[in-house]
Amino acid sequence: MKLSFDVVELAPADHPEIGEKAPDFTRPLVNDEFWEDVSLSELTDDGPVVLVFHPMDGDFPATYIWQEIRDRGWDEYDAEVVGLSISTPYEHARFLEEWDVEPFRLFSDPGNGVAERYGIAHELDGMAGIEEPRPAVFVIDEDRTIETGWVATEWPEFPPYDEIEAAIEDL
Image: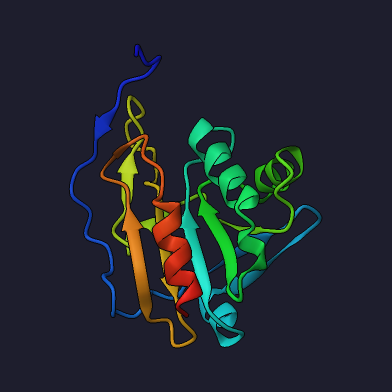
């Protein structure tokens, strides 16, 4: 099969591991109508969180990841599923509405600082100095402990949805 893009191996990541505390952060958390600054610890105070790092809105992997999460019914779990990318709040609001993934909210991190703290930032191919998070998913409990995690090793690569679902169900 001839792909219209190259599969690229990503450099090793230095991400938090299972059993470690997830780094806290505060960023605008966006739904399809508004946004407000929210911290990860505020979300985990209310229960487990599934933190999904994804490429910028409009990139086909972001669309595919969120449609798959929506179609699998992750909004039905007893964990809040939120995303994070370098896209602006305006882009997130448009993305959520356009792709019909409104049950979810997305953190906006245009400076990519959160991905840097999580050790999963990578430069966009051919765009010197421009970074975004590589695809990654962390299942985080109420104490902000990482229960399971997955980080892409190549681009494009998609999460092992079944394994993540099993981890969410085990919370």
